Length: 199
Image (cartoon, rainbow, N blue to C red; front, side, top):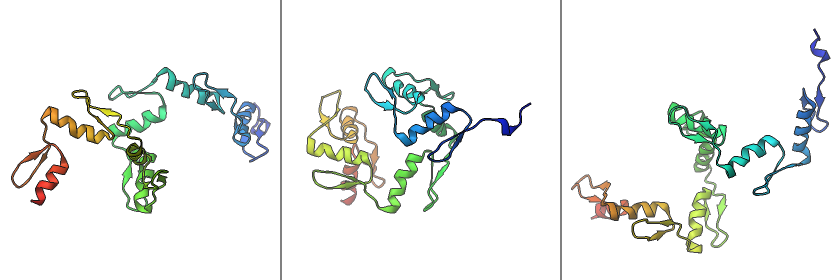
């Protein structure tokens, strides 16, 4: 039996990280060289590792090999399945050090942290208005472009915000989820309830 000192290792000359296999060292070196030899034939995006290309290809094929055993929802990435599973377990491993609120995903924590910093990193190049989240900027940009991607299937009226479409759909369904606690009058839109409460 060979001792541990007989095991051959491969060391990165850049950062001195050690690997047990030469192939692992070769893959690692691309971190330093920026080499991305694996290219997607569909969109020409390049990757440093073959495994990353294989994972990316699911965007084009629609392949979702990771399935939730609770609700059978499927995912193309294992990390997305792990994040989804927290819905069922209620696990929230990411905690804000400022207010101790917990979150199921790191991305949710990062979005939350901006509340404490007051940072608004996303800026509109047209009017210079800033936003906490990229989704807020994207929604705002439709004011300038006039784009209305959310269309009512009943009357074909279009809206720039999904929330506006949801409010509009109640015209057709007759749903009035916003109720006055004083007189019990109900409204289809929250803004109408707010106006009513001021009377």
